Amino acid sequence: MSNLLRGQLAFITGAGGGIGRAVCRALAKEGADIIAADENIRTAKETISDLTSSNHLPIQIDVSNAASVDDALKKVVGHFSRAPTIVVNAAGITRDNFLLKLPVEDFEKVIDVNLKGTFLVTKACVNSMIEGNVSRGGSVVNIASIVGKTGNIGQSNYCASKAGVEAFTKTASMEFGKFGVRVNAVLPGIIETAMIETIPSEVKQMFKSKIALGRMGKPEEVAELVLFLASPQSSYINGASVEITGGMH
Image 1 (tube, helix red, strand yellow):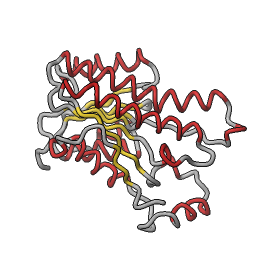
Image 2 (cartoon, helix red, strand yellow):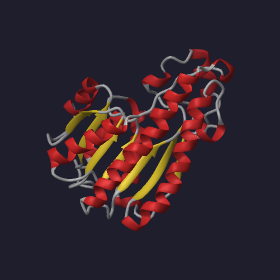
Image 3 (cartoon, helix red, strand yellow):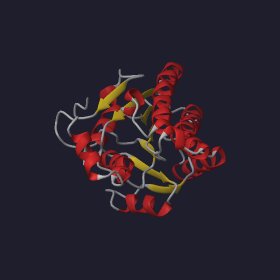
């Protein structure tokens, strides 16, 4: 374990699996204390159970619900007696369907979790940083997606939500700069997570054929990028959208 993030408190949503869990591991390895926030408290606890050191907290959260987000932040500040200095918005869902068949509630749910959730968590955490006088050097990393730029058949709701996350990131970076908080977005391509396990194998092969490196990415590879953006090593990167796609075209 090194000490790149020693003394930092990291609030990570979607921490129960996939990219969120990999981010928890990467940041804990560098000395950060971890708040593993997930709608499923069981998976959040599983994430915490295999982290190095013991000063970590699993917490149940519905990122699309303002009261749930505020309650989670109160518990965090109560437990650690300080505000988070790193925020990673990794909570995300899909409800895929062709646009003409997509139920309104499936469109709304994806926007609520992926976009509104990023807004609610960012707002609550950065307010907490400013009130706690720990905003200087603060970092917010939002997990967007390459399909927010390219579009993707059957994912009009998901693509719209992730494009929104990218635009939200740029605006937040402008507003929070004066407080010393940087805000950046990560745009993964096809990553091996539970979210893509349901995709038929022939569709996966089609995707792979479009990736220059000829393979899907690993959550750990995304986590290393998030770690860089969360750390002082990226101290002049703000409002950026960094693609991590293996050269997908």
